[in-house]
Length: 489
Image 1 (cartoon, rainbow, N blue to C red):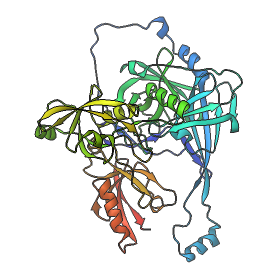
Image 2: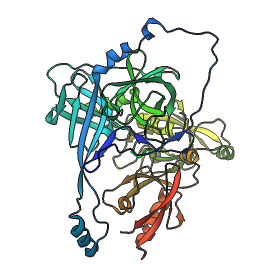
Image 3: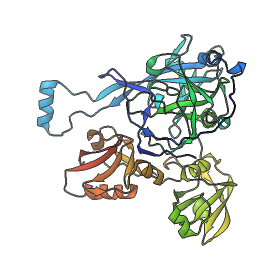
Image 4: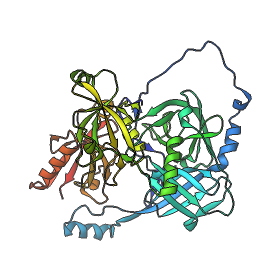
């Protein structure tokens, strides 16, 4: 899979969020990505055939199945950031009681893929929603008990809704995202900034984009990149080919301004189809679990191990009592083949493991002690408390933060030698009051460099037992470094 190379990376989630106090769009994140360019020489000029002469035909086929999704939820926000009664009394005297609950609204898109009312969209469009309204292109609306959230999968940023309908609804045909080519036409349809039925056209700019630093928990990344204009509100809407088939769901954009600059990303429809199938039939997505901590191999490591070929992942550690442990895998082994296919990199390996049905016995080949050997391993279901396949289970939040280590490719793309990625910030926590957000990279705490997840929790534990009341935390966000003040709880 291709990786992003960049000086700084962030994400604009393609749905728009508004609070009860602020009318407008909450746009979080920035990317600056310099994708690999591929060029091919062509000696002849190819003219468009009759089926390719007009995008209007595609729009006529797909637009009736594109929906507008609006949702709302109550959130707890921090009030007075001090426990001192004086400050509380002072604030309430001059400003009144400080509210601790707000209503946030989210706007996005979706696509009907079954005539009985099933809709695909992005998880971040409906996550935590208490009320969801679905509006069709012809003006029909569904809300309240007529809209049901079938299931969510934050790891792929996908969700399935179902509207109650007495008659069949228009549907979009789902295509085959594996068959698309770089340079193929790409047509995005959705509701950017609430502008229903907006159509933009571009091409497939790249395939297999991964290792984007996302503020959401989207761990399985295999994005289609396109220059078709995508803006906040497009999230969950279809990306189509010239035949009117859905090849992806528009999900995120990269932009220093918060609006389209020609770099957008869509979840491949083949991934979405499998997630939707499991959400509808099981109510959740089951993924395979091996129980190892994979690590990228660089040229020096390969040389030291005597490993030939630019493939394989190094096992940094094995979780006790897991399928990997029972199969005899060890720290220092290199997995070169998984279920009959060569392993490209850590991201590729995670997806392979996750896509394997729990209970299946898989043949793997490893490199150990200068020679190749084979093992069989029976995978289990990925535990709820575990992170994505191959990642350690998340630790208990410290200061209201849940973090993970940066991969080697993530560090390289940001030109960082250390740091941990913030995956979650608990509402009302010390971290939230300090202004730390999901997607931030923590570089230093109290002047101490944070190299990985384990070191973060070690430093946090030491600070909790110290007498310090406040520390400085260095943050990397959107290509710049700055400090925030963190009050220890």
